[in-house]
Image (cartoon, rainbow, N blue to C red; front, side, top):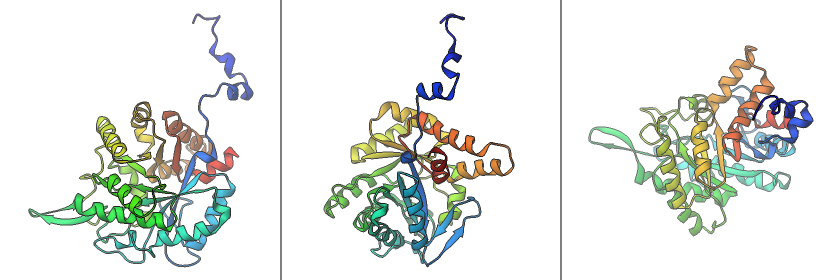
Length: 329
């Protein structure tokens, strides 16, 4: 490459030229929109720390889903806010649990068939203590017991698949949960239901607003005993390898923006379909800048998503899904 024979700007002269040589594309079908389902009717409760995001009753969630389908969005990721919580998070695996009810309602509307319905599998939204598993007292300490939690998570996955989930997505980070879920799904006749494993979920400060949305903040301690240390990229590859060996069909990396290096490393190493979750803190941080006029809203939003795609994510879970889809057309 010798100047002036090589001029890189030649391929940037016009939008048509830039489009012709563009390496990475962002499309509405690559976006997944999270929904927070709550009891009641006609409920659309704003989440203060997440502008434009709401807790929704099932009837309102159906309206939201119809809008997403009309925009060509790829799917929905469902979280539940139960009427009551308990030590064992029974609402996560109850046949009449809030997400199970929502799944049945969504599946009844054939106009929503283009949307892939993904059910998050965890106990944190359903436990009175806010942790992702069963708490036990041992040697004067309280901690989440891995092996007592796994059967409950497997039971939740089977219940959600029976209610109509197209994909179940374990986000708890318990060891061995993918294998247990695969067994429970197969025994329940759901051999065709894929598992989208949050294979590398880091203990991140960027989850803060989500805990407002899902009312899932731990009542004691934190989740660093089971979610990954933010410093460990090599360990993330071991986590992914383990989940693939246990039967994971797809991978989900969380968070996205602060962990683009981990997404790239996983993409270079593994061939499974892989998504990334642009989490609540990433969304709210950008919104704070938009509201102050510090960033161009549309450009910054799309650029943040394009960066995640460029790092290697096949699809993105994002609260920007609807806004981005409108711009992408």
